[in-house]
Amino acid sequence: MSIRGVSINIQGLGYRYSSRGNPTFSNLRLEARKGEALAIIGRSGCGKSTLLHIIAGLNRPTEGIIEFDGKKVDGPSSRWVMMFQAPHLYPWMKVAQNVGVGLKFARWPEKDKAERVAEALRLVELQDYADVSVQDLSGGQQQRVALARSLVMEPELLLLDEPFSALDAFTRASLQRDVRSIAKRLGFNLIIVTHDIDEAVLMADRAVIMAGSPGKIVTEIEVNLPDPRTRQDAAVQAMRARLMDEFHAAAQVAGTPFTEEAKQEEVIIDA
Ligand SMILES: Nc1ncnc2c1ncn2[C@@H]1O[C@H](COP(=O)(O)OP(=O)(O)O)[C@@H](O)[C@H]1O
Ligand SMILES: [Mg+2]
Image (cartoon, rainbow, N blue to C red; front, side, top):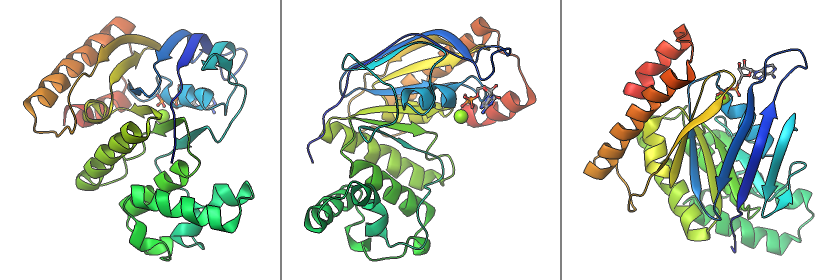
């Protein structure tokens, strides 16, 4: 597969769900280099998913611009694809059929499609599962199928909205490592939305912290750590501690109301 990244330029971005309501965020600026893995960290409700949907072209911003390689984004595209917490597979299809579904819609010839699907399955280490029904797979394997289905389109940007939060810790760790290593090998951009600080440290080149209502980007930190990264590395733990401090400081700066939901989340963030 030959995948390249995009440079991302977001300026003055604002969004409101209703014309009379408060903005979800306003005047937001975010830039990313070609091939960069960016994490957006923030508590529930600060607008992370809304931002990701807008970047994916699924929602239109109320104000501001989004450009990929200097070109305005004005809708969804197979060049930027999104992965969600649930894999959203077709349960009646085999693994390979699920992975090839985008190519089928694009009317690829059968032989080219089969080659591309096989390559995507190798990348996610599911090459032995092509003819298995997705219903017979574990949650982690299903999320790998969803990942292969995204990769098969050779995206320049993969957007991930808390994609591993429903998985057990071991499965989550292997997917975090593999998604980063595949993105780095193939060169595409990642934007990972998460409220898990570890996930940001393990997967990102840079983390931005979003807080407040309306949401703003309060801080950004380069996560300049060598690969492969593991939770036990002293450098990973030091970065985690630094991000945690910044995260708490950001919440205070932004004056985030400390809701019951936020208190619950604190448990996850401090775990
Ligand atoms: N479809 C919607 N209609 C109206 N308000 C929404 C909708 N989706 C989200 N919101 C509100 O927008 C804010 C940001 O939500 P969201 O982007 O989902 O935050 P996050 O992903 O950070 O948890 C929240 O206050 C939420 O209630
Ligand atoms: Mg969300």
